[in-house]
Image (cartoon, rainbow, N blue to C red; front, top):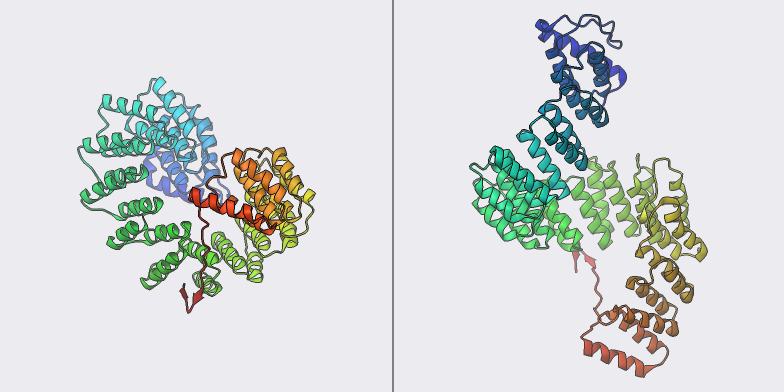
Length: 565
């Protein structure tokens, strides 16, 4: 937690009083003029007192105090004290000032293994894994010998970068010095091998451990789940002496990820004390798999079981409600979020905007958007999408230009996808759409995807410009993309252009995209029927039967008395 300058000075005064009262034997105390103005006298405190002060400063996030202490230490000759310098490196690391920590590390005359471990772990903990590996290699080349902590931190970096060979070489070195069988080292090795896809080695390490703790069991279960060996994960789970919530949740996440929702539910029902995260994993799984009805039923069960609803549960169920367009449920959940004080969270506000716009309640979505105290990119994109979905293209374009004026926001690919979708719903000139399309790469460095070109193609089809759309596909480098040509075929169907449709179908056949695609057959069959070419219609339907291609029937949900059918 960061503090203001005045708070930092006050904290410095209070901390130094406490430190030197406790460490009076270490040296004379510091004298301060006032709580907001601290000055150091010529009397120097001892190293132990300074180490304690640096530890407290780092733990409380007093970054400016760390820098003041750094200046004091340098001025009064403590720079050569490795213990004090290590504490300062740790202080910078804890206050997220890794650049200062890095610079200080190279100024230490004789860094010891603690010095090296502090800077390497700082890099790994802040996500700078390659840099952490580089420093570990420097440590190996130095006169300082790595200890168990050095190896485990390096293994953590290998796990995140999936450096199996390098991780195995570290394992070999650990075996040579006899530290591979300890709990912490063993757990890190299991994790590294599991994340690098070498489950067999992870299992060997686990079975070779002299003692296993709960972390060991959880790590091997997680490794099995990560490598899709769910049966093996269940085997270890059943062997585990005392499975905890983390173990159960690892298995639930794994079965949800690989689509076995029934098994996930079975594990949830067997849990002694499921937490919110346990329920949320399954709820999110249903939503991600478009099983909206099951998601609503599970949410109802969660409510009746008295499960604490957090922002993840509410945002997930709002997504299900938005997909079903059940505004009565949506309003109820919105009220629930208001009562719990969660409506001010950006993730909830964006989900509410999305729900209302998909339920056709655009005014409510606008109200939610306007009253948000902070708006991130997701909120802006959701509102632009809401306007596009409800056919209000002019407001979507206006909001996009308003967004571009925000200092700390830049549109992304989703922003442009929503904008192009909005343009396709109104009489925006095609040239203006193409300018937005080109602006993605030219102004923002965003590589257009096939979804973006498809929006342009559909708009051209609505205006009868299918031949120009063909040129656009070629000009923007999508000539070998079957999805783009499929979108053009849909545009041909919309404007009933049989000649262009034949050309596009020929291209799809050339790309190998037409044989088992029922959409191609249906569009061509409908166009031939519209043109009165019934022999061709019969021929296409025969081809569909011969190839086993079937038109999928449509389906929809209706709500009756809070029951979905």
